Image 1 (tube, rainbow, N blue to C red):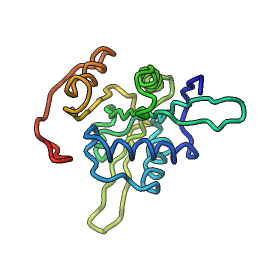
Image 2 (image 1 turned 90 degrees about the horizontal axis):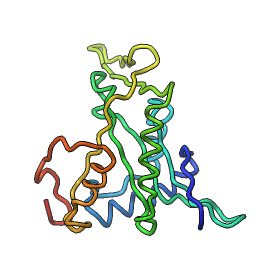
Image 3 (image 1 turned 180 degrees about the horizontal axis):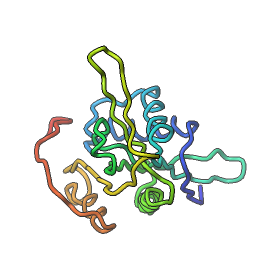
Image 4 (image 1 turned 60 degrees about the vertical axis):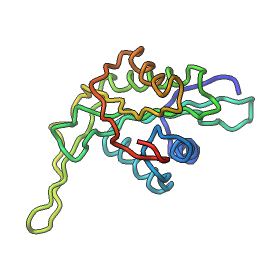
Length: 196
C-alpha cells in the first residue's frame, strides 16, 4: 500500500470501519464501549450522521497497487453532542480512529485536518433536531431554524488509557498541538478492563 487518500465515507466502507472500531472496543480503554456495536447499528448511525444531520464522515483509504481493493486505515466523523437538544446544535463531537497497524504515519493528522475543514466548508450545516412526544403519543420532530446551524464547537472527548503512550497523555498532547484546548477532566467516570 502506498498512497493515503481522505474522502467521504460510503456505506461500502462501513464493514472495514466496523473492524477498526471493534478492535478499539475489545483491546483498549480509549472507548468506554464494552462491546462492539452491530453492523446494523453502525449503518444506522452513519445514515443519521450523514443523511439526516448533514455532518461529515470521512475515511482514510490506502490505495494499493492497481487492481487491489482500497483499504480503510482510519476514519473520522462529527456527531451531535447531546443531539436530543436543539440548544446544543452548534456543538458536535469528534470521533477519530486509525487502524493500529497504520499509526504514527500522520494519517490521524490528515483525517483531523480534513474533518475540521469539512466542518467549516460553505453550506455545511448541522441539521439539529429535537423529538417531542405529545400527551397524545404523537411524535413531533422540531428542526433547527432554516437549513440547520453552523458548527461552532468541536469536542474531542477522550478516555486516557494509562497503557497508552506517555501513560495515556500522548493523545491529549496530540490534540492540544493541533489547536484543541483542554476544558476539564472527569476522573474515574468510566470503568473498563478492571480499571477506572
